[in-house]
Length: 472
Ligand SMILES: Cc1cc2nc3c(=O)[nH]c(=O)nc-3n(C[C@H](O)[C@H](O)[C@H](O)COP(=O)(O)OP(=O)(O)OC[C@H]3O[C@@H](n4cnc5c(N)ncnc54)[C@H](O)[C@@H]3O)c2cc1C
Ligand SMILES: NC(=O)c1ccc[n+]([C@@H]2O[C@H](COP(=O)([O-])OP(=O)(O)OC[C@H]3O[C@@H](n4cnc5c(N)ncnc54)[C@H](O)[C@@H]3O)[C@@H](O)[C@H]2O)c1
Image: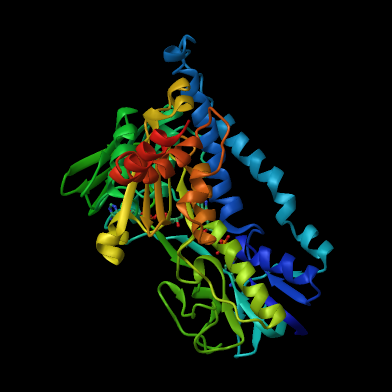
């Protein structure tokens, strides 16, 4: 058995672990990184990257067959599903070197390609190496949760871990789960030519603002995607060719099945109890400083830290931990300024409080301002005028923003910046944006906050009247 002593041992080489490893080693810490499967984790191999690459193929196919309204004759896109998957693999391969063992070894990180497990409060074993570290970071991510639905074990089903390897185009894809994974994959497949049915036990896009979700779902349905809500999958049967999902709303049959009903954290291999590390089904039990509540040497980052599960959150955790582990400075995570986006078309994006939560928290002190995309000239020119932004404002400062519409994932950045830096609505309203851009939607929402105060105010009118009467 080999023994290594190090400053920091990071368990899991995905979005969170790699960001911490790269930062810590370049600032002078001795770092050991354990990765038992693929460097880059879920995001690179089975998540964000392949899903956005497949969505890009689907968008191209859709645009080709929907040029008519812009005076470009519709052409039926000839989709080669396997070639689209080649594109996905190529995109992963292009990004892969950035996350590779070679790059990290080059930076000075000791990478061990084994799963790690705690053998004591101060030691982790990975293969035939025992690592003793001053600090451990657990960043082991999450995996698809596959519920024990009777009959599921007798049919072939896909998850995000193998759908991107499928090369035969599904004739009819049944997706169980109407969250971001389910709907992004549903629309991508529908646009590439598969018939798609989404079966959702409660409300699709249930974590988003219901008014905005309704707009997104209307559009998905208008594209021909069947979305059945309040239809919990209770039983699954199959005859080798057809798979049938039985729900209280009826039976739905297709050729392929994708399970997208949520995530479970990767903690089974860690032997957390041997490390004296408290945990529950959401991950490690940590305080706002991301430190284990029971073993002070141990921190969590990313999906396994029990909060929002996004790559940019894992990256944000890395920054919080570097401040605390490397410099010994107090460092706490915030969650009120974390945005997210769902890359269906039109996109959905959100940051801060939803309208419902803002009203609950601030009651009558919250103002909700709205602006429709059909008032944005660029959106009209591009025929992308379906969309809505809502901004929740308290005492002149935004506390939340929700957007459905073209480029919502890009537009939310301005509100994320405003909330992160406690900026006022006037900062957005005072910003001059190039015309015509979709980002003017943000400025118009800020304008909607000030308009009634300027245009419907008797006081403003009387001041203007007074000044005008006296001007030469
Ligand atoms: C289909 C899909 C699409 C997504 N799209 C987006 C998106 O568009 N935007 C976004 O922000 N997020 C997206 N996400 C979420 C994002 O992928 C995750 O939030 C992110 O990868 C979490 O990073 P992490 O570091 O916590 O875990 P991961 O990136 O999953 O890394 C964990 C790593 O730990 C390794 N590991 C596990 N156990 C051990 C062990 N005991 N020892 C050693 N190594 C171990 C694993 O092999 C893995 O490589 C998507 C997820 C999915 C599934
Ligand atoms: N664009 C992005 O940033 C992005 C994209 C994909 C995934 N992600 C991350 O991955 C996480 C997981 O995504 P997800 O879509 O798997 O999970 P989710 O929890 O958001 O959605 C799963 C859905 O499945 C439904 N469901 C559960 N059991 C069911 C059953 N038996 N029958 C029918 N429906 C059932 C739930 O009601 C829920 O609406 C997201 O929360 C997000 O953190 C992010």
